[in-house]
Length: 279
Image (cartoon, rainbow, N blue to C red; front, side, top):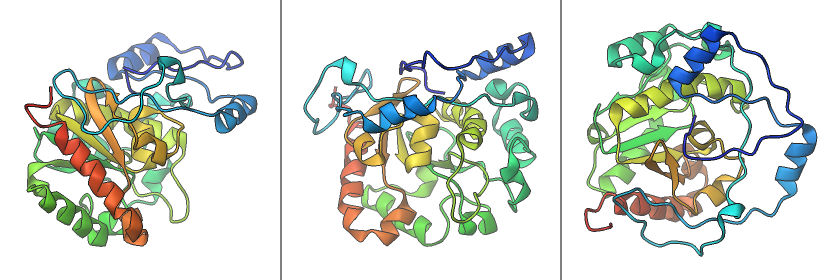
């Protein structure tokens, strides 16, 4: 999914043999595929003392406030992504235009989430926006209204954008997953990796100057990082050369009012990357 980050490979991982069509399709989509780490490897990641690295700015911008720098050897640990059954995904995603990708998402049956949705939701907003905002997955409100960031969470996001003198028509809104997940459970890595192919194409079409990843699943889809959201907030990440700022999702902020100030700081940080004099 992400191209700039190097992924530690578990020596005990098993590698599947893919046929020529599968390899060509994965290469076309820019998707790198690994087996899930072993139980021992997951335990090592969970117990390791991972240090933060200095924020990585885009080529023409720099961050506002930066945490203390450490060596590159302390970079974030990353999750391995399971083998994806690409036979369930349409061919040529990396070449699709907006009409084609909308059609593909609307008819996608790549994973079991398609069985419980009312509709798949691609996204909305300005197709060539400076800001791209990626949420975790559509909820009940989004599934009913067939739009991104609907209901009370959407109203909160609208207010956050208004504080930056922005409207949802001036940004591009989407989710890491295109279908709602069952109430009470998070998306699986397989489900995230299916939709990540669509998300990567959306980023290429929008070509934003900054991506705001609002939630843990959004961060996983873009960064494959296994670190908690709280740590990911402390540094600027990168997806295909585009700076990514990670923050809390609006639905979480509705339940945890105390973290609104932190989310506002994240938005201001993302906005600072847009300043022409921040190079």
